[in-house]
Length: 193
Image (cartoon, rainbow, N blue to C red; front, side):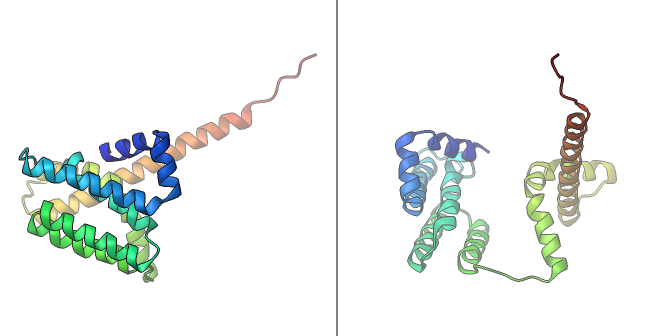
């Protein structure tokens, strides 16, 4: 969230916005480089944990670069930057998943999945924010209510709970939209005599 707000704030600076509009890939990669330097400085000089907004902004900027990387050399540049950042800022487990996931996103442009797998994948993607925000709440609730300590079961409760939170959010906003539409249909314009 903080990284998104910071990037939004940068978009309000006219020279930065014009530079990004003129050269989106180069701007994104440049931002990733500046953010990487800040994260490395934070980790090495201040002894800070790089899993915060300072340490993660380079990943967000690289995500922007991935979106704009059209040519092979741009994709290779993104992968090289990702490898450098992962190997210097992350622990071994995070390195593995970041590099595998990043390589898949960059190198596999299109993937055809069977309809049931695509449906589940799309649902998880749509619910990912709610899974991220609610997984600990749901996992801890499962632990307290059902006395569950197994990590796998807690993980499953976290994912299912996040998906349920997503459905509740969709239901809420669908209801709000329905009420707005119903009120809009009941209004009749007043005619002046």
